[in-house]
Amino acid sequence: MTTLVHDTTEAVCLCQEYNLFLKPIDKLTLSVALPQLKLPGKSISNWEVMERVKAMVAPEQFSALRISKSTMDFIRFEGEVENRGVVKILLAKLDGKSIKLSGFTDILKVRAVENKMDFPTRYDWDSFFRDAKDMNDTVPGERPDTIHLEGLPCRWFTLPDGPPDRPSETALQTIFQGFGQVRHVDIPMLDPYREETLDKNFNTFTFGGHLNFEAYVQYQEYDGFAKAMDTLRGMKLMYKGEDGKAVACNIKVTFDTSKHLSDVALKRRQQERLRILELERQREELKRKEKEEEERHKEEERYKEAEEEEKERRREERIRKREQKLRDREERRNLKKVKRRQEEEQKKLQMKIATEERRLLLAQRNLESIRLIAELLGRAKREKEELARQKEELARLEQLEACRREQEAELRRVELEKGRALDLQRRERELRERLVGNLLKKAGGEGENQTSTQPSALTMHKGDSSDLSKTICRFSREKSNHSREKSKPKTYRLKMTRCHVSEFHV
Image (tube, rainbow, N blue to C red; front, top):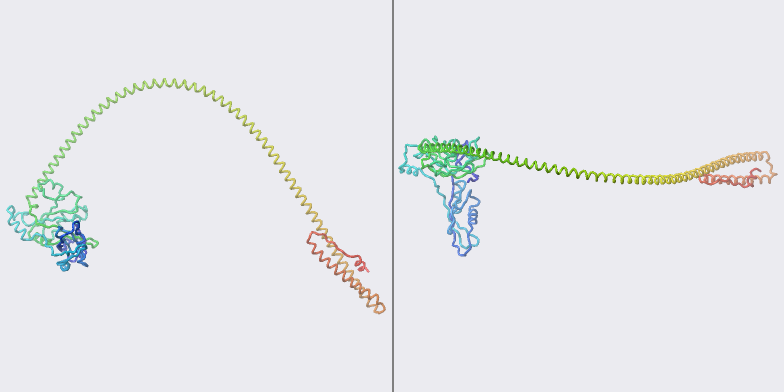
């Protein structure tokens, strides 16, 4: 299981090429004593206790906190932090403190200690190989020179151009040769025949169905082995990606006690592999022979089936021909019956056709008669409509002629009025000339006869001039009335009294 790492200051480089580092493991063991439950059916929630523990260490926090053991008397937690500086702070906040849960009167005591690492020491492997009677310190693999690693992520040990989920022995050797010269490495999951070897205690997996793998790394010298074990003690493996994010996982590191990479074990596994290959070849050969035998049996069965099918086909062909003859005979009989029936139906059909043609001819004649009558009626209707239209046209022409006559009469009346007006103007002009001439004559007569012996004549002339002025004014009024009445369709008439005319002449 991998966890995200936020603080990488304590990380130590393992292999820069594969971005692998070693980060110290900082773990705490917490024990929370539980009170005696007096009420039946009442229980304490482990999740609630864990949340209270997390709240006690705030603002610090665990990178991982899980329950390692839970009983009726206590709950044991295993917590992990990112660096050693936080361990002391968490111990001061947790060790000897108490927790008060809702619904419980009793107080829960908390004990916290730093977790001891379960990792083999130099004394462990020295004493093991010294006391083991079946080990030989002079033989590789039977002395402290092989490391057994478990829980390695597959993706971190792949080649750049290799499968993404398949670890590589080359990558494993490159990563761990920084501690010393590597003599041999082995990844059991890469051997497809490992399940069938004599070593039945391996945890092998089918490729593609796992995320982690186990491996063996054997060093040439004891110093490389010792240096690797001392460096890996209390460490977890960390991978830092190209984006700067880092993840870490716990790995199990022990020294090999099974002589896994000894020459005898390697030779035995090689012999077993060859034996398995030979058995597999024999099985393949046996399968091939069985397949060939099966194919031969199938071929014989197919041949027999083909013969049976041919016999069956011939028998069916004979039956089919016999049935075909019977069908042909029956068809000929049916054809004769059908032909006679068709001839009878043809005769009936011809009679029916002749009858229908007669009816059709009569119907056509009736239709032609109806069309002829309809045409005559239509023609009469059209003639009637034409007469009505001609009458309307004649009435319209008569109306137009009457209007034209009225317009001509009005035009003649207007011309007559115009002639009268011109005559009146001419007469007015003549009267004015005559009046002016008379006035001039009277003015000349007064100059010659300046005697005062004719009062009656002078008096008469004065009266005549007043009458003349009245006549001129009346004539002017009549002229203005005539000009106003000229625009109206009325006859202009000039009225003049005979007395005025006679007076004008005198």
